[in-house]
Image (cartoon, rainbow, N blue to C red; front, side, top):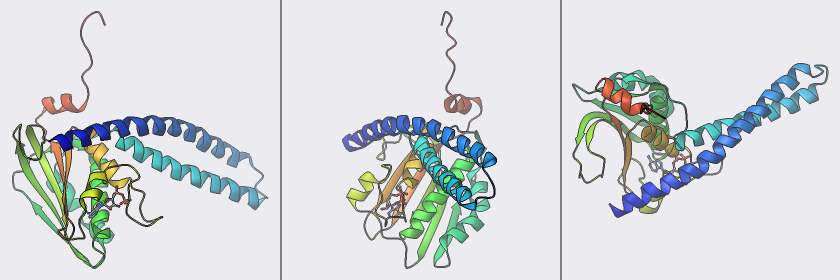
Amino acid sequence: AQEALRQAQKMEAVGQLTGGIAHDFNNMLAVVIGSLDLLSRRVDASDPKIRRYIDAAAEGAQRAATLTQRLLAFSRQQPLNPEVVDANQLVPDMSELLRHSLGADVRLETRLAAGLWRTHADRNQLENAILNLAVNARDAMPEGGRLTIETRNASMQEQDSAAIPGGDYVLIAVSDTGAGMSPEVKAKAFDPFFTTKQVGKGTGLGLSQVYGFVRQSGGQVRISSAPGEGTIIKLYLPRFTGDACDAAAEPQQDLRPGG
Ligand code: ADP
């Protein structure tokens, strides 16, 4: 529990730091992208060199903007559009995309619990998170293997072993039969820019983005992994129970008089 608390405090501090930087960069990049757009409309079309320079600058700025958006997701400052989501529908809807991303050597298996609760989350971001996890799993199984996506209702008591705050959650567990993580990698896996992949192969932002999105949605993420034993990433998303859940997802306005 001590370790979990330290980890949470670290993520909080790193999140605040990166969030501040990402926010400022995002604003500056908006100026750069907007100005390049104006410039490209006015430039002399007869000079292909100038066009190429502008396109290269715009492409670089666009990549930087994608990166800052992932950092904003990590620091829970990304605008979300939560809606009621049935994971038992969302997961099968993704199966074609997942199979394509996993390639021929990785088998996809889904286990969907009957009577699954619904959750309240941003559908696109949730799909994005599951896709991120699947791509990581594929990378951990270069010789092939099996990716399992399981859904389940999870009622957590206050003092369970995983230290999830008590309450009802929709659990989406993504597990692979891949290389697994050493304790050192596991401890850093959510850190932005932490990657064990080759330069150009990984940005180290996938799990950070997943972490930030799930926490911003009022949920929790847990990793179980050991070298040679594969990896399970569990997303605990809050159960949708009507108005009560809406209130949790969107911070209540302060309605006290005299404010
Ligand atoms: P990236 O995939 O760009 O490296 P991530 O934040 O998604 O960034 O992952 C960080 C690191 O965590 C990876 O480089 C890898 O070492 C480890 N990791 C993530 N998912 C898995 C997995 N399913 N199996 C083994 N290691 C993993």
